[in-house]
Image (cartoon, rainbow, N blue to C red; front, side, top):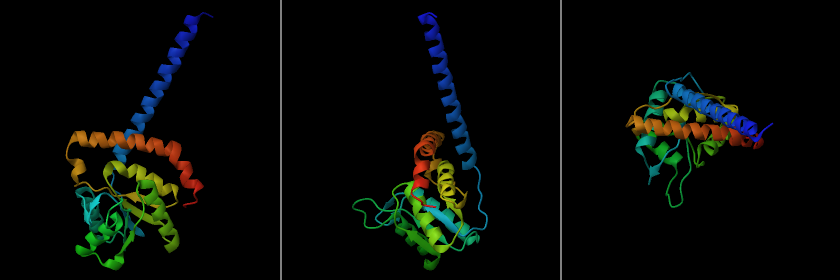
Length: 210
């Protein structure tokens, strides 16, 4: 066999792997797009609002949109409680979870119907905190409120820690400001989802978070 033979086969293998990677990326992106457009909010034990930025106790526009949506679900009797989750950054005087609770209470949600979990600097840490609270209280089902493009990854993580999770994405926040913004979020979430499935899934199970 000549060197040219190996070159040809090497190129075939390279382009074959490239095509498989492209198909995988497109499949995940399509799944993210489909879940983003699906709103499922059956009667559940809790509505879980994943945190976003807050400024000295004032939720950012993204976070406020999630909280407003969670309140509408609570008002519709989807669940008897709302869980806000998220820690704080160095120098913050409060946490995302506390800012979320204060925001909801100021808009008429009873304080005893909001459980703030003041920990978590990313989605995986937040989901682990929620799983621990669910185990403590004997809860099983949740409706997760987050941005549409984040819904698939958040739901997958929650189900991996044995929470019967559905998603009800908010659709009125600044994430819908333009098509380019939506496209950027889909690309980011596609890569983040694949990274989690490759590297993060095992860490969830090894910690015994479920």
